[in-house]
Image (tube, rainbow, N blue to C red; front, side, top):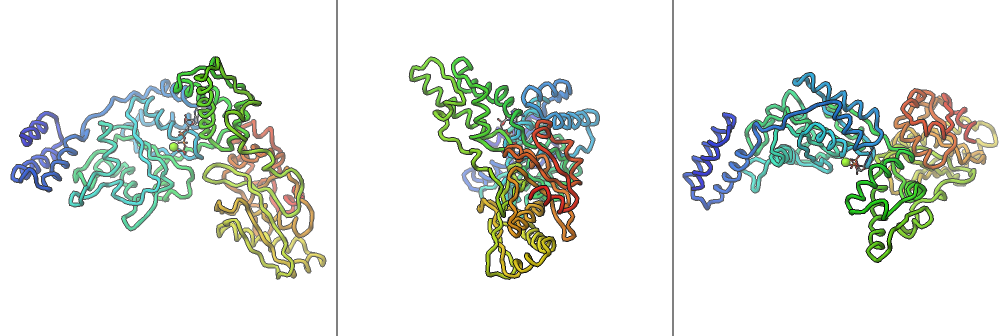
Length: 522
Ligand code: ATP
Ligand code: MG
């Protein structure tokens, strides 16, 4: 009876020739076998997969650019240039079906809306949406599947997702391409390369299916927090769209117009029963979250709403959330301005770092330890490149502080360089100028201004070289209440991408040489 059902199924739909041949072969094998044998189970599972794959099924495309634009605007605040790039990408696809379109890669800190943009793209095109997280993936079989001889074998995640969605042309977001690993079980990145390569992916062969499946109609969108850990061969195939963090004003808009309406709906409440003042939302942004995206903002607003719902169910008529009573809902603020430097100090300089979670303020502390020999030690998990910057900073400081008083100092002192917080690994060359400033201050005893932050790579000749992540870094400076930022002259052109709100709040000093920077900071 089972055999009959299988044969009927095979006859009831149209399958590619290879699938029909393969299925007939396997059904014939199954017929000769005891239905209770382990091998029969394996064959049944296999037939179940190949007969249920959407070999031809697809949803009709409607790339109506005006509609897509409207949809994106409705669901995502701001992100003008990001949306523009997405629309260009879709328009190009619309005009040429066979265009070897590159794969979109949305890069940015957590909670800026990368995954949800992918979902919106799918929805606005009327396509099915799937998501695969690549984070921590180490085994090639997770992409390409296990051979059938393997106990408990299954197809890889790509084929699984497509079967679940039931169409061959879904939008699939591949999250965290920057966090894939390599192990003895193979390199998932190279398997992914085949999936994403338009030359190869029309005949993608999963180890389990053993039959080519056409992935060329799938619209793959990848997301990542950082670019530098993405394997270069993959990065090469991708069209990178960077999403930086949001300013406080943008977050306020997102909270009011997107997050709160969403939460009200989720909890079946409305702004009459639970209301927020603007000041309350601003305080949540500043004192309860300090992030580039809006993930924690979302979480904190949800927490307030849950507490408020409890009060309503205990008999209160309505709940008003203001800046003053916020602590009743969220407890003591996690961040206060006292985390920031408030006065000039000797041996501490304020740097700007660019990490996976966005831009961050970074204090560099230098303590001269008497009885040494001009050597230095570092703590705070500094990477090799950053340690080299420290070495350069020390040599340069020695050259710049070139008079008798100080030369003796260098001969008899070691330098301890520490960058809190110790548990977070830090690397990159862009702290060079900050290291130099902190060392120079420690040597000369001149305090460093507390309201000045800086970033820039330095060379032994005393040049200041450009850095990456300018926008993110400036957002962090702005969040920390910095007044003036010292930047490499070569980064001046990048200022174009920085929101006006931030440009208005900060003064910029562009420098070519380290002396100019020291003059501003000390
Ligand atoms: P991660 O790197 O952690 O995966 P992500 O960038 O994928 O983060 P999402 O999960 O897409 O972030 O977004 C987090 C939340 O923030 C979602 O609820 C999303 O709707 C909201 N959000 C982010 N940006 C915007 C925006 N511009 N407008 C409206 N809502 C936004
Ligand atoms: Mg995401």
